[in-house]
Image (cartoon, rainbow, N blue to C red):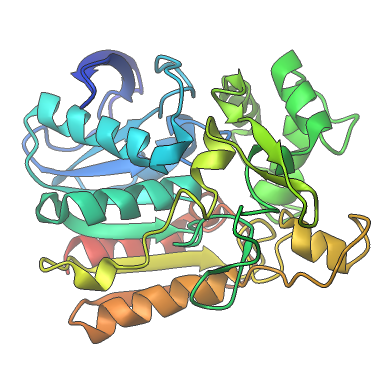
Length: 349
């Protein structure tokens, strides 16, 4: 088995800007095999896919990328008014540069939103789609009901202003400890995975988290004031704003003509993407953690994803939902054997 090393692949965005995509070298596998492209989530990098890549059968060619602003990829700004299309376009440019016409896509958390957008834009290029604890097809925060109805026209309760400023500060300062419950290491240990599990490669994952570029153009992004509770609405720049429901919505996957099989796999004890998320200000308001709550309902993230995928299935697509007991937000790290078995099934569907 080859050791993991890296190379840089120059790609061109649709806007003719030049991006450097940091691509881990294939870990074993067949250079001529079917490509499995792994896309990480927010405040993380391709390093979170290393173990999964090493367990793929040799017939596949595993590739994981660092999205712009994370890891070793150039920190181009994120235009949040395009939703996650900056990231999706970068993936398309990477595959074109590698001469790959079709690939299996695996997206975790925010990466799930990116690969859903890629499927919407390039359905013929997708062999299969695997969503790992994915963000809702209606984004993160600011909506209610299974159809993703905006709680406020301006998307109040979502976007860059919803990030905890102490976490952002510690992330920007490169904090590697766990003296604070809001340090990157503490968040990894309590939110990315379900306690008391501590990931085998925890130090490497913390280092990966600390590569996150911070600021208005990156994480968390800018914000605007709102007259609606909780007083903040999405801005137009940066990571959390590209997931705001005013900018991101991929609820029409059922309209795609070429429908590849979809795997939705998640940990049952996820506290980040959930129907009562500990990162959703509406839920935090309901439990008294955010003052002045006006009764705004929590976003039913799982119900929203299920609603969109059920419509995809009703229109002829093949969907499998796998809920893993005892796992949190990073089911591929917490239950690698169960995750690998589910992934192997969809890769051969």
